[in-house]
Amino acid sequence: MTRSSEAGAGYGRLFLDREFRALWAGSALGTASTSMAGLALGLLVHAETGSAFLTALVVFGPSLAQLFGASALMSAVDTVPPRMLLAASGAALAIAFTAQAAFDLAPAGRLAIVVCTSVVLSLASGARWGLLADVVPANRYALARSAMNVSVGVMQVVGFALGGVLSVLWAPTAIFWIATGCSAVAALVSWFGIGSHAPRRSGRPGFRATWAANTLLLRQPSTRWLLIALCVPNGLVAGCEALFVSYAPSAAASFFVAGAAGMLAGDVLMGRVLTERSRRVGTEWLRLLLPVPFLVFVLQPPIPVAAVMVGIGSIGYAASLGQQELLVAVTPRELTGQVLGAESSARVAFQGVAAAVAGGLAEIVQTGLAIGLLSLTSIAVSVMLIPGLGRAVHSGPVGQPLLHQ
Image 1 (cartoon, rainbow, N blue to C red):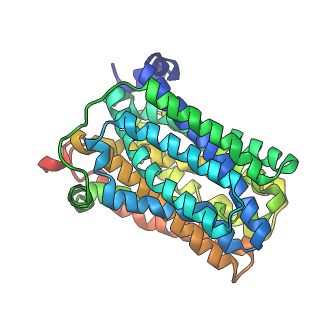
Image 2: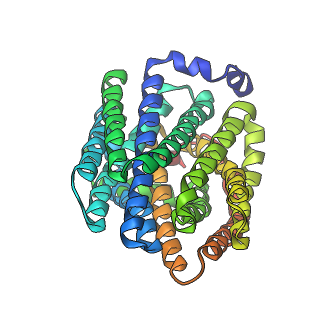
């Protein structure tokens, strides 16, 4: 069966598999909890400090901790049963959100809690994406990843919208209790819905094993350029999003909802509508679509206009789906979890870097101008990456294992 005919079968066929349902539900619940909690955390810190820098740092900065997981511990995702890692990550989030809700913490204390859980989440992402590559056939991976991304988009819309409504009715700390419940259910779904899978390879996880594979990954032109493209342009746009609360605190939830809706539309387009060939072409255009609409913030448009532009631009996040599909194709199975986890963690970590830069920039210039400068930089990086990505795609046969090149 060809890829296009598999895609034609739609998402419904994927949900016949119990493990895929568990992966999808666990991811959806986790996204809903982190979206609500992230908005509550940003509103809480902004109300206490009034600082754009601290607000951006506490919302996106903890993602930098995922870089530690990727660089020091990511080998664990291929040497430890994935069910254990996924259930543990849900439990860790539940404990963290309980602490955020139950204690009157200073911003530094709240940041420390999220930093610790971010390390666990980095390992969970590797376990999730590695297991997904095992659960579904290779010729349905793009469709399955699209379905997972759709759950992220939908749950971000739900999480941010619900968080925005509840923040009007309740104190932000109350939202953390709902996030705690979602995370606890996610842990149970992962534990009881995912089967017992043997590790993909033997050996002791640790810094040396992690960096042996990371070095191999970075040496390959095909993966090196893909990693840069997956991390830098997207991260700069995430820096724009880190300034939403500072730009318009009362309208931040609408911006986040619009962005999540745009991401959802893009994922459906890439995973459900386009074929493999058209995804490769569409990826190039979507990479350039992503940052352009954010330039409008320089003009201080009305909130509805700005929200629409955020939604249009966020469709461009779907370019990562085509790039991730290619990354899976050139990665050997015994490193799948680590490579996909490293990609996810590096991408999230650079979002944290960009958020910190964005927050610092907004302390110097007007917030709308800071968003415009970040989006302009993202455009420039995307254009500069075109030759390298072209060489990467044609550097060798797709599917040739990295360990044998």
